[in-house]
Amino acid sequence: MKFTIVGAGSWGTAFAGILLERGHEVTLAARDPEQVEAIRATGRNPRYARTVDLRGVDAVTTDALPAGEDVNVLAVPSKAFAEVAAALPGDAPVLSLTKGLDPATGDRLSLHVGDRPVAVLSGPNIADEIVRGLPTAAVVASEDGFLAGQLQHAINSMAFRVYVNADVVGVELCAAAKNVIALAAGGVDGLGLGDNAKAALITRGLAEMARLGEAAGARPETFAGLAGMGDLIVTCESPHGRNRHAGELIAQGRTADEAAAEIGQTVEGLTTAPVLRDLSHRLGVELPITEGVCAVLSGQSLPELMSRLMGRQPTEE
Image 1 (cartoon, rainbow, N blue to C red):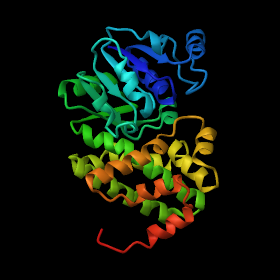
Image 2: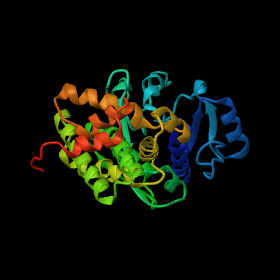
Image 3: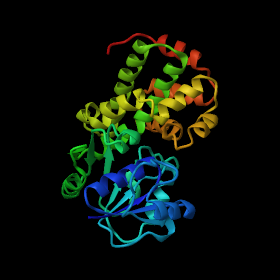
């Protein structure tokens, strides 16, 4: 198959490596002409996932995307997703790798691809481990069963096992919400509150995600699957997780902007947290951890937040 990946960050580059190993034709698009020229000249991405062998990739700038592809893959920040999707040539299906919500509208990102068939890939997929060839699994969600099966066959390998799921709503909400919970988990690490506290926070975070999903019409089992529990665990625990790391840095005294600058890559949870909070208000769902993350990003101290969360009225699980 012919794939164009828009977005040459860590995940887009790692995914290009997955597709190349499966024998597909891959175009990798980046905004920066210098980055494109470096990929063409060296067969490596000079900025992200540098060990991925990109020889055989057709590197182009994002203003020169080819038409006639079988699938367009979007691996761009959530704030750029709608604009990039609107500019895609042709009418090929879209596979979204972006984990967030549209900050301008609060919509799920798949709603911004127009009339194209759309699928979403999610799961415990830390790019650094995928680049090293370590095994993992993912889920491809689409309401188009043929497209989901086609992508499953195209991507699945011994190191990257792919399942299909028809619950696009659930998979997208999991992908967005887990980053916000990971910010809070990083805060637990930064304050040195221990493994018990972190396990409790992850568990209650999953309960928040499931409540939100139920209110939005998602399937409950999705939140116990790869896009839900699987991605939440790795994002909250991995030392490579950007959102967990950002939360840790904020707990140690950095501002959100300083944490993002130190990490040097997109930290989706910082964008998603207020959008997710606003969505929960529209749906009438209580998300105390998400509300707390937003409060900290607005200036509340983390110790004060922890005191407030622990002091809430006890209730049934």
